[in-house]
Length: 101
Ligand code: HEC
Image (cartoon, rainbow, N blue to C red; front, side, top):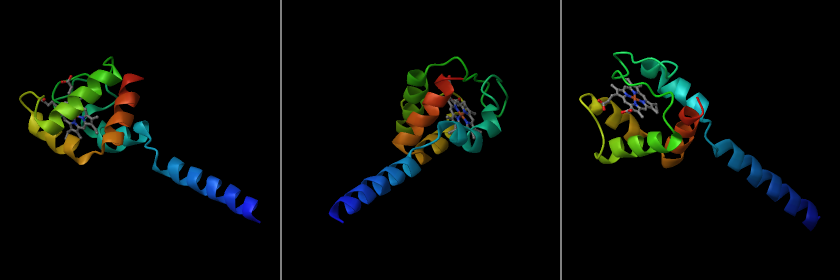
């Protein structure tokens, strides 16, 4: 019985962790694609920047920079709002997704 309980605990914890793991691609589609499209376009809404081709390190550095005020251009207000709404793990996941485009 004890052993069954232990197995169930492990399975349960694993399920919870998986549920909290952030899907960078889905997050991008929901929260970024409106302006940045598929990442290749330098659209006006996206501030004329092309995200595709940038490494995940560059993206997370820029996102964290928007959030703490150390990075940004003419239209940074938009990104400051967006970046500061994201959790650290969401920034990491979305940066990894963009890095893999
Ligand atoms: C409402 C439109 C909008 C949305 C939504 C949006 N962005 Fe932006 N993004 C911009 C604008 C405008 C800029 C240019 C800001 C500036 O002047 O610094 C920008 C710039 C950036 C940059 C800096 C690129 C560079 O090379 O300087 C990154 C990285 C970025 N966005 C990532 C994201 C991510 C990731 C998301 C989704 C979580 C997102 N953006 C959602 C409008 C948007």
